[in-house]
Image 1: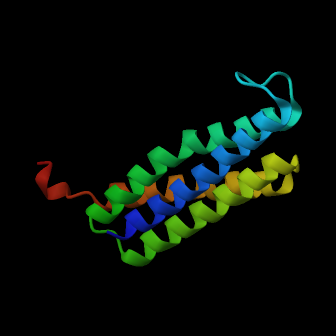
Image 2: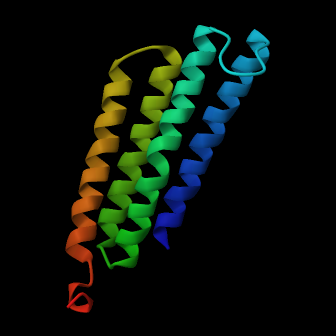
Image 3: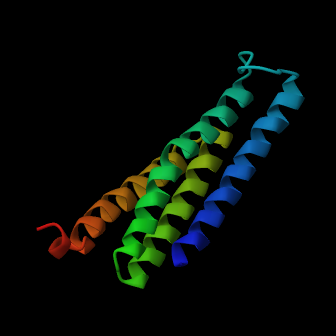
Length: 128
């Protein structure tokens, strides 16, 4: 399954963002929550945002592949999503807005595309 390739990349992005949270916790000596530390707040925000969008998007990617979507659409959606998530995470960590907008644009575009792809590729003959 090609979608597994992109799930592995999502896991790598989540690991990177997790390590950023750990790094900021050690640096600011905060065990729980964010302690009001700006860098830790940003790191936690980047991580939680990725956790919010990655599972449902990867599930839709797997289902699109399972339902017989063209392989190029799986690759395109997976690649755009990963690039968007990396840009979004880096942008939050560095406190810039440009990459954050681009990252969310990529995320929402892929989610919308996968919704449409999954509806089109559903085995409708099995419904009725």
